[in-house]
Image 1: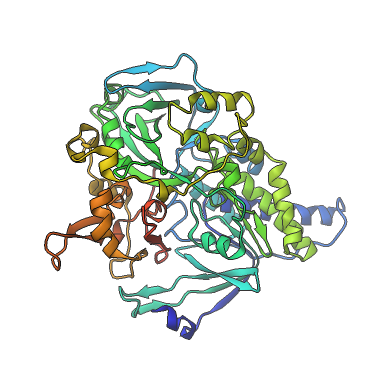
Image 2: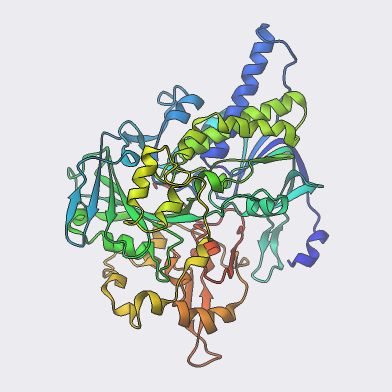
Length: 575
């Protein structure tokens, strides 16, 4: 269906009181906390402990683009339990799926064939007392807690358009289902719904595709630093029985990062499993930036290989995470809307932690929504209370300490270390405060000749280990481990504005970065049968695992990641 005939579609409309877009930790915490607050208010009114009127039953709806809650949830798996204790004090008794507590942490510098353990674990890498979890399992459990309280959760519904009355957000439209490759209607066509709400809470996760539109229309990023990102990939490795002691968290710097900024994490789980991951800054100048390749290289290091030899990779995933921090946070509210969690850039990038901040933001938004319900007013004036709550919480105190971290580290791993140390002493200030981010991620890529010379693929740094289907994988085999699924007869959700740029300029100048940074082998340059000697871009959109790197790192800003038909994407179970 083309843009021109969208208005011809007859759509059903559904009214809800509070609409939450995104069924991750942020959105589910908002829904659960709001329902608990309403119940407590009504109990207090009934008992005479509080004056006022009881709140009538509220329709709280959570829509999630994944086929089920948790299917698109991927994280580093270390949880600071502070927000969880606030939300569900008896979370252990309620069966919260905790893998283990962190009992030991360490940090290493890796050379190509050696390791050096830092004598003291730097404060950002200290995790004793935190919890190791699978975010996929954790969010499924949160969803069950919500449903037990009567909250309506609708998986498989992707929000594609915000609804407005003037500049006031009044809900969303969900995507149409049952379209063919050309946008025509198949026999199973289902038009999207118009979900009207008194207040909409955006909790889409990293680089929320709908919120990007809303922020642009409403100017919510005016005066802010550009949002910048990191890309992380990870695997779960089943090791030999009796070889792994659970509860260890290890971070490393150095190998296999050659250009730009990156690091690794190792988490040990019960049942002799290891989570192994690599994270790299997306504002690298390297056109061959490839975290999947670097993760495979990491496993060849003697320190890592000694842990995993004899094991087998059983799961894989990848996602971006917002790295800009406090100064890249959008305005958090407007008439009829609030934004929470990763969508609002609420990640402590120095510690690689954001789950507890997302949950706390959801709780702050829920408390503000309760105020709006009691006042029957969801104007920006009422919802501004949400920003006040964020500023008084550990969301600000945590992010304030790292407000200049990404800006400094982008100077280079080693050049920035003295300044990072100074920031640690000065509560995040360093030499200068409110450091600007001068670029978007796609603007930093340099030509391959300038970066790697005339024969980049002959250099050892760009060689991946030979796949064996056990410990070492090519990208396509790794994608299989994500369980990702898209209807191959539906329209591509990855929109390339000008494919001639890919053929005529990008391949020669940059060696097609999307072919490398994409962790799922979505983009591929293949021989162009119409123009001998040239290559054209082929988009294997059914491989997409929704990391959204292509939306932010194409050097020509030529790719637009849009929301696919609801239910498509990865099917994470363990990671």
